[in-house]
Image (cartoon, rainbow, N blue to C red; front, side, top):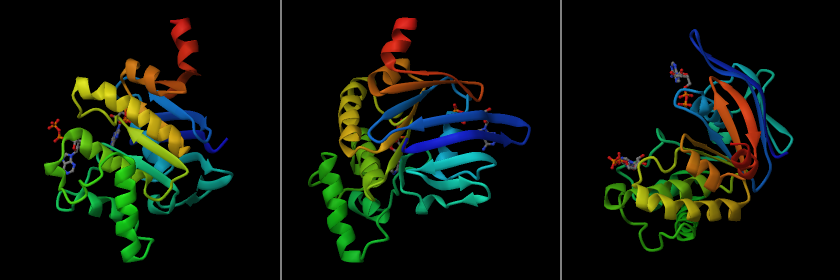
Length: 226
Ligand code: ADP
Ligand code: ADP
């Protein structure tokens, strides 16, 4: 397995947000984390991304330990791309600059060219000079996706990526994003509370409830069981 989350437990004070969760994803696989608000989905993703300090358990990618046993690799040093609700675009930077920001490991000149390439790959050719407020919600979401993909991550995490997009656009964007994710071939975890979205996007669906994964199966298997 490419991405391995093992025995993860997380508390906020006395709240047990994640309760002994283990979850794996292969390269090119989209696993949807599905469950009601407050069940621990975002916390689990933030822990895996390194945005929250791991209290117990392990996170590994392609056999390398990223967190656990006293190790906690900082988010920027993990080969992981993410699109989180609270990790929005910088309003004072253009689309290109937003993507280039993720490429600070490259020399200055190379950053721009790579950022342009990434924007083109998400269908934003020619819009790189625009500021976020000059882009539609769907376009902003694509910029965020381009930024997440910019460093060629081996895992990609998305937290409710369609939440700010209206229902009509959502359906189309969903298919496009699924195609883009599959094309990149990273191990993908996508958080949603929308069953339709989970069924349409996931190769596998992990159902969360009160901090635990209570079931994990293909959409077809879940659908037939329902
Ligand atoms: P979900 O993403 O499924 O909505 P969360 O991971 O956001 O769930 O939250 C899981 C639980 O942890 C909830 O009970 C929530 O209130 C609590 N929680 C989340 N973030 C914090 C925080 N920063 N401080 C305290 N409690 C939190
Ligand atoms: P609405 O108000 O129509 O629900 P928002 O404008 O709050 O939508 O957000 C639309 C999307 O753009 C969200 O994904 C949000 O994360 C992102 N976003 C919001 N404000 C900014 C900003 N200033 N710069 C970049 N992205 C933003």
